[in-house]
Image (cartoon, rainbow, N blue to C red; front, side):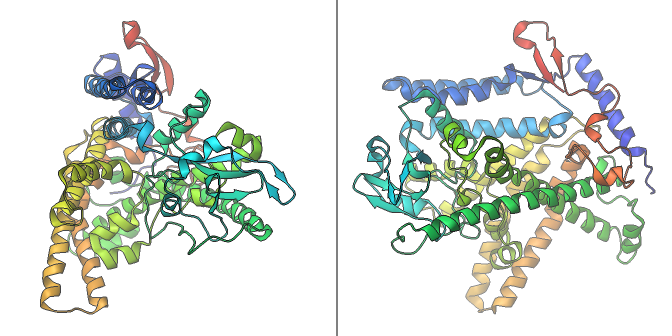
Length: 549
């Protein structure tokens, strides 16, 4: 099979034509603003306003808002579809994740009682003397000072200090950090605190932070040193280094994602129109495939590329956080103004830990459990693990017992399966997606971890294997397991049209003549009849709004 440069554009145009017909016939609607954001509004109201209600009204309002969010999503789920938002994948993913966090924040917890974050307090520096934070901000920290050190990761150049007025986390010229529970001073402070709670995936500056030893910054040993000028300089140097690496990583992964996108559009499988084991259009891969029977090499290369592209795309997205919040935003508005806008400690280096663990060590030492628990990113970790923690707490089940581990695995991977199945169900593509396939893929991971753990436990009873043999066994198990179940997710990605999405506004490689070689600026040249935004008339005011297509 040879690649036709026009095939990519033809696939895009065919999908656009089908989409326009479905919208015109009323089978689907675009994502309508503001109505389709009502579930998000329910969460916002629950976090911001419910804790201010007296007694039972607090609990009643949180439950009512949660049920309202679920009801709206269930009623609207069959209709909103987009070609943007990653072919509609983002609709289901964001909606299902939002429902999970609504349950976690409003049902399993009371925001006014259960959450605290580390905040900036601007201070005045007069020579060697530093004005301490006001008492109202530190009284709540007196009860359990060890919590700060236990839950906060800071580098050796950072200080944790206690004074008579309470617990401060760190002091540098210009500001200090303190723990802050649900704010009751100003409404703007409450909005800042609440929005951070709802959008902080790993909770780096929250007391529920996802702590992963493999890539978290460790707290200092013993009592912290007294803050010195050297510590101040180390902080500035660390921040400058963070800014340098954020710019470098952004540029590096921008080019890498652009290269991968340019490459993928030359292979029919990644366009969603050919099966996994179909012949390849890449001559070099076709040659390699003759070395083994069937299409084993082609299957291996395609699955490997999907893994690498997924990791690269996610890393590219993750690189935007330190680039924007610690580099671009302070540059344009100034650091002092930044602290006036938000009390989140955006200029602290520990706010931006690495997103990935060590892949080789994680897989070899812990197998499938290490892959998901140590290496893979932790963006959804709190939301998918908190329900099982609460459940075991209510049922008095030891989380380290076999039953406890099974509950944690099936709840976590069950919710992850639901997220990706929901995302698959809201895509619009030429070849219909199969949401049950990603659901089975992620649920199978729980089974695989239990099976591998049990096999390793029984074999270790019979003979004590050397470390190298154990590592080889773990790696082989992961490879074989993903070889058979990986296509469930990989094929659905292709069917959903994930790889048709334009990830960058300016394509260096396509502009230079590689791949489809169609344009430098793919965002400016959608298929004929395509658009991003427009007014959608649904026949009634509550069905009409700004359509995201």
